[in-house]
Length: 385
RNA sequence: CGGGGUGUCGUAUACCGGUAGUACGCAUGCUUUGGGAGCAUGUUGACUGGGUUCAAUUCCCAGCACCCCGACCA
Image 1 (tube, rainbow, N blue to C red):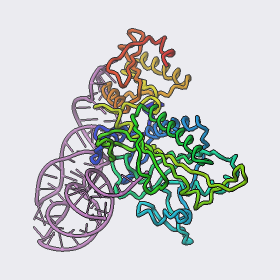
Image 2 (image 1 turned 120 degrees about the horizontal axis):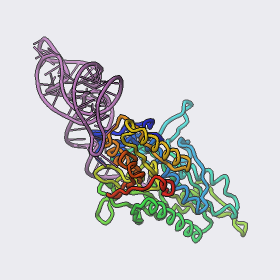
Image 3 (image 1 turned 90 degrees about the horizontal axis):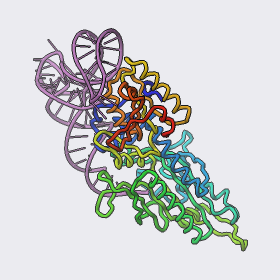
Image 4 (image 1 turned 90 degrees about the vertical axis):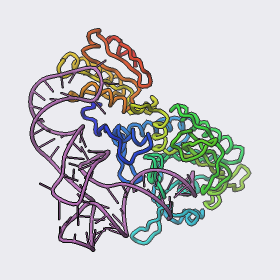
């Protein structure tokens, strides 16, 4: 991607209302744009990060055989009445009506919708165990959205649902997903501590929250603030019973499936990552979810055709190799501004090509999380990545 | 939902009961180019409604929006 064509703009000033560091940097870097309280658009840069987070999560779920599907965000109130949650949950659940007067709700989670599907397709013991996963929007009429992406009215959640034949089998599944969550946070270098939690409105027996210590967090962990990154629930028969999710066991008798659910808020995870990885100059993305892997910067290319030529060559080579590269080809920006933007955006590896580096037939490489830079011969550039 | 705060160009802000200013951005030109460059020219603004007043962006009231603290939170 050529930066001269990149949609979005870095900002020198933080938005007046932004207080959380993740909100400030994501807004200044041109990752997100606020539409209203708790409602944000993801600009191309932010969307790339979001998609990368999704990719990491999907890869980990694929490893344990989860199948991906997607369910609607508008549900008939009927299914929420079946479990009683329609009346248990307060104003946080958006309630709307169709033209014909049908009562509908905007989904804040998908246990009911999932249970309705499971009821139809789970029939025999061989259909289980089953693990289904989706990435879908959740809508919550929050009394107080806050902290940029930390608490939203609309967000994208990875929510997986498991069905098992016995408690013992469920325990295995639960442990597997638990491990998946630990792997996901590990890949992002995030410290996420699982703690037993109340399952609240979700019901069921027990649940675990994955908490990341952070100044800005809303929850408490050992007396300190923390951000809830994920939550796993042992739902037992809470949904299986009202939705009649029976399977025929080996002995021919009907038995209820045991259900679990597992959720991670992608938007919040992005914000939490910035909270964990930044410095005074900007974001320092963990490699797996960085919007680009390499930030290629040319300096003085307008006055020095050779720099331009070499930079274009390296760019083309990287593209040909499939390297995700953001190429700062802007000729109306000074070196200082380019560096400042690069630090703000936070791409892991910066490659600078200038008159100075060309004198030594080299480019300069610097990792975003390191202070020092080093020169690499241009002839060796291709072998680095 | 309780408490507090804030609404001024695209962004961040200043001043003011009497023609609204600065910086950044954006546009054009020239000069610049290793840490947010220089000069010139141009560009755009008082949340909404009501009240007080000769006169309101400024004071008062209401609404709306946004932010923060708390409650709630999957």
